[in-house]
Image (cartoon, rainbow, N blue to C red):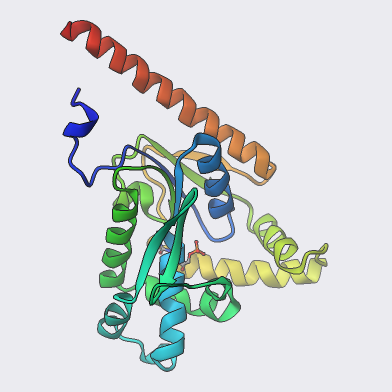
Length: 244
Ligand code: DC
């Protein structure tokens, strides 16, 4: 067992990878899991969103965005450490809530399809994770970004329930069935656009949250992470025993 200081400097200490489709609760779950474990949260989708916001301000209509133009704009985007996680910056200023807006949400899948942009995001996420214990959420974290993560969770939920949760969050009231039906249609269309990169790793644990509360989802993932921490600790002890 190499000592921690012998690890290459770009190796994260521990990664919990949380993937899943839109509105499956990845980001909020990842945030709370990170807080409970004392890890840092890295939201990979926020990087795609921040670049999309910048492009919408500076690169004309979305149909005209090219990979080269977006890669040039990406030089102005980075993740800055904040307590418990990272915040996306544009030109060193916080990108703000605009990254969650409807326009960005509509255009972001186009940006996330571009291979060079995916590589840029993956590099930024790995950089943020360097030397940290992290909970990273996205679509391809367990398959592409950190294929060796010791804990991978793939969150799913019934589309109607995902739509309902998203509307409750956005409207801060109980949505009507018609509103949920409309939102479900939008979500299913987004699922189709993001399908190629939203992949469950073979060794991921599938967690269906349709009938779980947020607190229950967090509890389950924290319990899995703690169990793995204990296994790692016991292995470390056993290794030391043999060496002595
Ligand atoms: O999870 P989200 O809604 O913030 O993601 C925004 C967009 O980025 C969405 O189109 C999916 C895409 N994405 C991705 O392709 N890979 C990731 N690791 C994270 C997000």
